[in-house]
Amino acid sequence: EADIYQTPRYLVIGTGKKITLECSQTMGHDKMYWYQQDPGMELHLIHYSYGVNSTEKGDLSSESTVSRIRTEHFPLTLESARPSHTSQYLCASVTGNTEAFFGQGTRLTVV
Amino acid sequence: SQQGEEDPQALSIQEGENATMNCSYKTSINNLQWYRQNSGRGLVHLILIRSNEREKHSGRLRVTLDTSKKSSSLLITASRAADTASYFCATYGNFNKFYFGSGTKLNVKP
Image 1: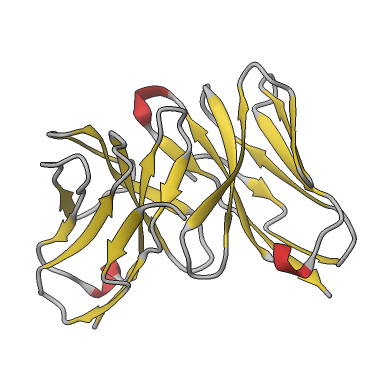
Image 2: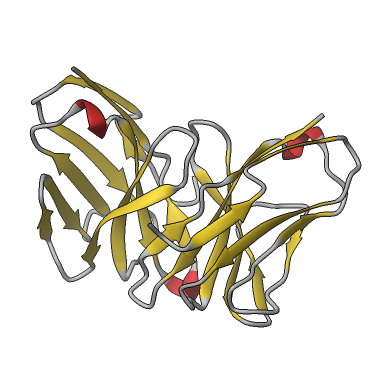
């Protein structure tokens, strides 16, 4: 089992709310990634990080932000959730050999 | 797609048959990987092939890579019902970007 955890597993919130999706890993990996995936569809890279204090936007335009203050923690924040943000969000951390370990995902529904 | 295309999009076979799925990618790569995703869950790493390798085996999995055609294939031999899942190829290239393909949904009927 990979030591990468995402919370919450499921979240239903109202439009306009601010939310933070948590992702933590205990493997000491420098590289971490956030993906958005609609059911049965491809993964879209939305943010990634090389290490502490480094964050980059992916290729999919996203209204979310991330931070990387500690190696093990890579939270994703939506300042004002909208129904179009309804999706599954997957966090991954990557070894030096570029093998990715994924969390179980957060399934977000904005009503 | 950020990465490229996989085909077929869906594949349905009988238990015991072989399953082949293909992946094409767009950029130059350091390596190509294959992942499996069970419904609604995170992805699990299956196998990695480096850009200077042409073929790799792991158990019932066989992966090929053709960098001149920017394509890869994953073969699962003697499939089992438990192999039912979505399979994604992934490339790790420049600027630390890690891209995934569109996936192939495999259904293995018992």
